[in-house]
Length: 381
Image (cartoon, rainbow, N blue to C red):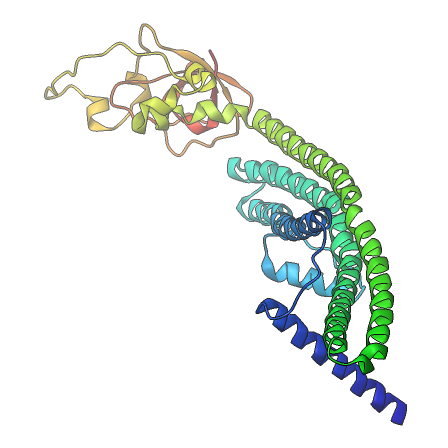
């Protein structure tokens, strides 16, 4: 017990003297042994590597997991050496909501069918995101963490030891200088000079040995850069594969819903003519121009169906030009006698009349005729 107390007191005294010496160096009141330029460059390079590795690591973590609370939870599980519980991705959660909504709205309805298709693609996107996060964590984040928590801690420890060795060396130099100054005044101090020179040689040896150990560790930063470069290539490859998968999933979904682009052209034309002609697909689906029919004034006893907003199919005649063929996408039940009931995948003839609601067309199937909703059709060229 007494030995431990003495050791603690000795360590405290050494720490205090080094702190005093370090402060005097900062104030320019004590001499300091300077490291060579090459060593200083190695130190600066190591510090730069550590700082940028931390920033890249933290920001990559934000990229892979934008939720701060989720990152904290993963950090705690990692520190407790426990497996992080599997977490549903945002895409998978959206897919779940879309599927449940489709079941409520009716999976056989146009909206329900589309929700199911989009939801399935969102599920695939979420699974791809999960695999990308796993791959990036293993190939990129883990090596960066290993450097900061392993190699860098070792380097920092050896640098602190080197700093203490340098302080001890400078303290011995100061004692030798003081002893030599006293020797010039009295010969009795010769023993003090010899003792100071002996301590200086020992301290110089320890400093040189520690400097060599630290230098070798600092030069190993080059190997760290090579390793991180390889990991960076793997990260880019994982990210490329992830985005390529996402792109392919969306292309597949777009093909499944390809017929929908042409069905909304009527709405787009009524609000934004530029948008309707922005893509070849939209332009191809646009109805051909219908010759302008002069508005006929209403005459007593003669019905004007368009002006009155009431359609009598028997009174509608197709225009000389401007008719098109269309494929029915979904079943449609007519609301009244002015509408035409539709069956999925059947082919009908459609055309528009001046003054009609752009969301509707006139559809003909043999002798049957009536209004049909544009959103239920795929217009053909």
